[in-house]
Length: 303
Ligand SMILES: Cc1cc2nc3c(=O)[nH]c(=O)nc-3n(C[C@H](O)[C@H](O)[C@H](O)COP(=O)(O)O)c2cc1C
Image (cartoon, rainbow, N blue to C red; front, side):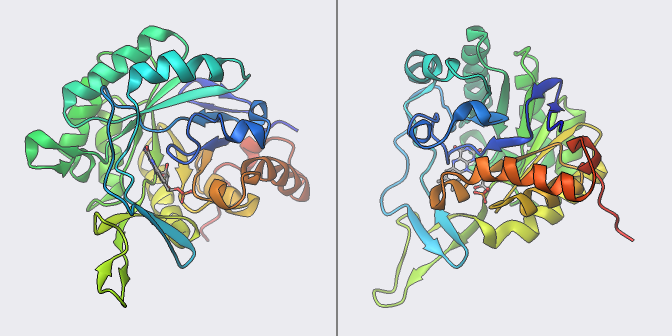
């Protein structure tokens, strides 16, 4: 059975990827699952200099999901290159580096550092970060600033560039088209949805930041709708994510046209989820008398 797929020219042994920020650099998970079995590992967001993240509490459980306001805490790209990349290199799986920034220049600088290593397979641009030069509005909330960021980074790297869309925008299909036209090699979606939760006893927010990103099964139907809309709109490859917790969920995203899927929050409740999805996809293919995952991709029949 052939589960291999190509994303922006990059060959993955199967379409199952870990979602950024939910898998660290894979070190802890490597004690629980065989990382060699994954299609790719997307590492947590990397900034130029270390970011402290938001004040605590910064995560809380919600019905069928979770809210987080981690604030992209990380030790910076140099620490990743020196201390985490050599570990990741020992596995036979693709590595996608997720990059974050507060200015266009910062994204470019991180992309350049990673491109120099020659050990990263693709970059994923997290465009949900606030643009401090434009009043803190997210780069991804409007098509023009997303396109400007995409083309600026694309010019400075030879690596395949995946642009990760935020669902907190007016028109996801228009946003996707604008980053495609700006030179993105692939698109991933969705990032988390802005939400909030209140402790009614104290009347205080459950997150110190008040608002945070909602993820997990609660968002799956909305994420699937957005992935479907984007797949219809663009010609480049799409990676679908948002609430995927089992092989049936993954199959839905593949059927609407995603070439690969990423698993995020589900890793927290069951670290085996990705491995179970890979096994489950084979069972689904067999039940449909298919021998190649590419037969499943895009097989959604709207009528
Ligand atoms: C704790 C946490 C941290 C995250 N950190 C990042 C990040 O660093 N960069 C990024 O692009 N997305 C980040 N995300 C978003 C996920 O990669 C994913 O897009 C989102 O959670 C939806 O997928 P899921 O419902 O399977 O978790 C984070 C999500 C969570 C829950």
